[in-house]
Image (cartoon, rainbow, N blue to C red; front, side, top):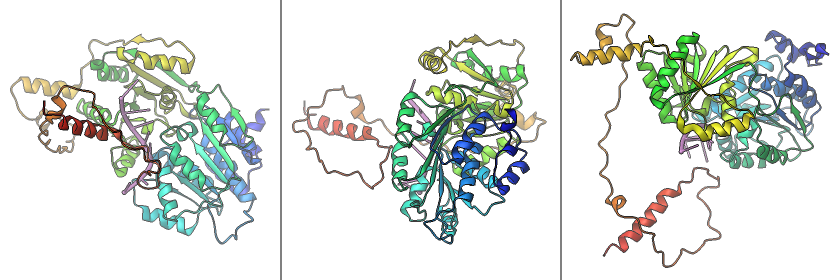
Length: 484
DNA sequence: AAAAAAC
């Protein structure tokens, strides 16, 4: 039995087998062993397996094999239409998967490229115009390229939704549906993720034809290699708790997940000030900054990567020993993905979630998803723990009546580059409207419903912000009745 | 209560 679990037992095409061997792959993971033969048959697949068990190879290798073995008869080989499309929910993940596919395809004549937002479109356009068989993309930028006629997808034979449950959730679905509308109906569709809710599963079924469902573990299972702890702390003690655990367990590197972009930037700055080598990754950073932050963490130049859920899924960084959840995630599924950044490929990992009293509901959601009671432990505080080296130094410095930064005088460490903070503009004066007592607006004639009204542009946007318009409506009615 | 994905 176990001999079937080796890559060498697959009848992979020689260039693929060579690439795989060159990358040091020997034994297959369960998801690979089960999914590869099914994808090789050309069947639709819904595949679920824990984080860090090699899902990318599980779909990429058989996909490339199919592209090699089955020439697209309907087009001349000179035209090189896109034959396989791989969609992902974040730019970094698209980049990573594209790099991996390039490695698998390195000895073949199959060409691949990746398109995602936040960077110049032109180089991507150039690559697309040269022709690629495999296109890896995030949804928004792909639609741009489709509209610009840079990408022609009417010959696509295979589409992969990686992190499929995320791709099918409400924020991505409109874009996804639009993209799928450009693809031939006759195609193979592959869905992969570590998490599938029952609703998403049902929805996913409507995109698949006679699919094979592969579940190598109970769906929504956390990786068994991750040791999980939940600590009860007040919000004020969270940073101290992280330092405590880092010290106690001798953690060299970790992800620290937070729920908001602002919280991410703030926490990273605080931890940095407390002497921890930290950087931040979130969607308000420029793409250049995002890639640099990730590269620095990957290279081990940075110890803590404070991130929003932009980094929760898929990112494969070797040997990250720990994940902290500074905030309990809003979506229980994201907990599984976040802690899946550690304990990858059989390595062991530690996941520490900081739980404050206001997290009761989220913890209940999580217990429901994980189907187990979660034990919340107290932090084992170490009384002689220094409470932030540099922070204390600064406090003492200030209390001694000194000004400036003690590091400029005392620190033997190499000087850090000073950050420039822009002066905050004075806050705008408060609109007196907001101080008026609230009254239900009386609307005499409701505005006529325009059945044929179209939103601007032909793209369905998830970023509709009705709040302003509502406020404006209240404002105008208030003003008109203001005479009293 | 948020984040992500296009300019």
